[in-house]
Amino acid sequence: MTDNAIISPDHQIRVHDRTFRPYIRRDEIQELVHDIAKRINHDFAGQEVTALVILKGAMVFAADLIRQLSMPVIVEFTRASSYGNSMTSAGTTAIEGLLADVTDRNVIIIEDIVDTGTTIRDLIKHLGGLQPRSITIAALLSKPSVHKDTLTIDYVGREIAPDFVVGYGMDYAGHGRQLDAIWVVTEEPTA
Image (cartoon, rainbow, N blue to C red; front, side, top):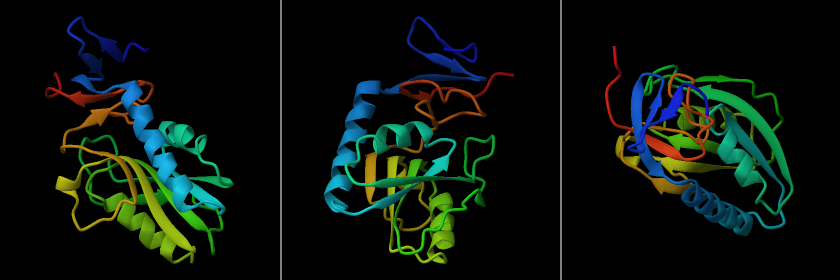
């Protein structure tokens, strides 16, 4: 653990300028990942898939998920973000780094968390123009109460309240990705 993530005696953690409390334990996360992998293995049995990992947040989830998939997997990466250094979606998505040919491929977008859905919607629109065979979404977490439109997430580990979370690849202003559990914010930033 680094100095920008310090656990207090009351089991809270400091990440950057905010305090977080435990939310989803490491063993619970692994159960969620296993369940998602099991469903993907069933749905894509005998087919090759292209796992499109959305960096940076989904890297830890993707690494654990991909190792549990039983079909051939091509792994590709893209950066798509609507957060910046904020705790809320900015409403516009920057997509960069997608160089792979996904024509006639089964693409599984791997995302850490779906908040408003802006990033996923924009990425699906972009991918649609590249003529994949199918596009599905695997997200560890989803906040359905703040989705801007109806959004189908094919494989979701857990639906959560619209609280800000950190850990297991998800960050706050670049901090906290290394945490092996998920923590939820408890207070406003300190001055």
